[in-house]
Image 1 (cartoon, rainbow, N blue to C red):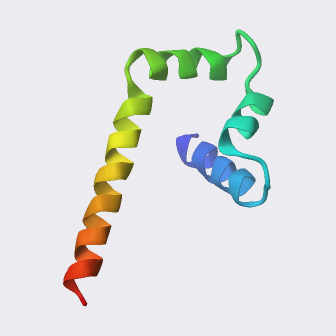
Image 2 (image 1 turned 60 degrees about the vertical axis):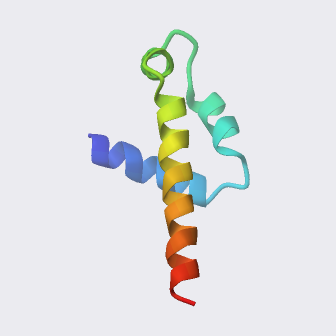
Length: 69
């Protein structure tokens, strides 16, 4: 189930010109299961954690690129 969820979301994102936030808003029903899950992610601080992960990976990528020159 989770694999299909991420596969479908990835395909939708790749095939769309809309932002991820806009796509999420379009598929999130008020008081639905996605809304409940997203509320829990927000309460747990997932957004900030993901931002930190992406920033750390980008910084490391830049370091590795600079070292290979």
